[in-house]
Amino acid sequence: MLVNRLIKPNTDLYKDLSHKSIQFDYLMAWDPLRWFGMWCMVLSGFNIAKGIENRYIFWDWKSGTMSIFFILIIVTIWTVFSSKNPKIPKNIDSLKSVLYFFLLGLSCLILGSFSHSMNIYFINYAPYLLYYFCLLFVFSIDVKSDGDNSPSIIDGNQRLVYLFIACILSLISSLLGYLLDDPIISTISTVYTPFLIVSIVMPMHIRHIQRARIYGLFIPAVFLSIRYPWFLIPLWSLFFILRVYHYFRFKTVFPTFAVDIE
Image (cartoon, rainbow, N blue to C red):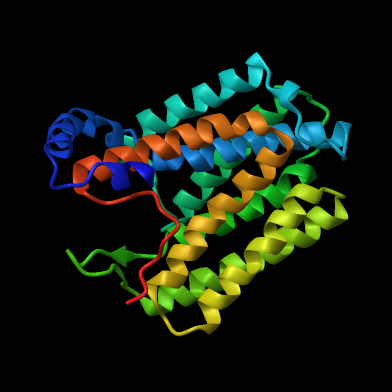
């Protein structure tokens, strides 16, 4: 990141900005990291509708409409308010949480698609739902932070079960996307599956889970942005804001594509 090269932690400017960054602690209470996934789900629904209309759509700046922007804002507001409610599941840990995430994911897809078209069958949503459930299982793997040390996986058995389920879901998503002639989700799932396979077959280490989480969101964001480049604006804006905040607040660059090697 350019900022951490220009403004070093031992400078007066850094100390001043670090003090001011405390004012933005409330931002993290809004769970902004979840916005990436929620936005991708909404745009996936939008992509289903646009893809049915024109399979070969590419780099379409004009596709951004007030309706899809409005829905993205509504979903963001929901994420902010739900993050403050302890009764709302944050990970998959019960049948209740599975039902909640199913309804949430389907709602995001339907809202995104209805912003453009209402002539869509449930089967068209299925591969996207499977993929995002795959990610939910990966993010639901229990990880603990050991202070200054690298984070570690708490339960090795849970890790294997969740990764195996995620891998199966990703493979089915890829096959179903291919059968439905949806090049976006079939490609996303196919590209992502090797990350899960590596996490399963390699010795247990946090870096494999970190990669599976990072690229699980990065891959759909990239492929959706190839069709709808305006999506890069909110994605990179939030990414940059979070990195700057974490750098001045905690002297760390986050979010990041780097993983723990040790």
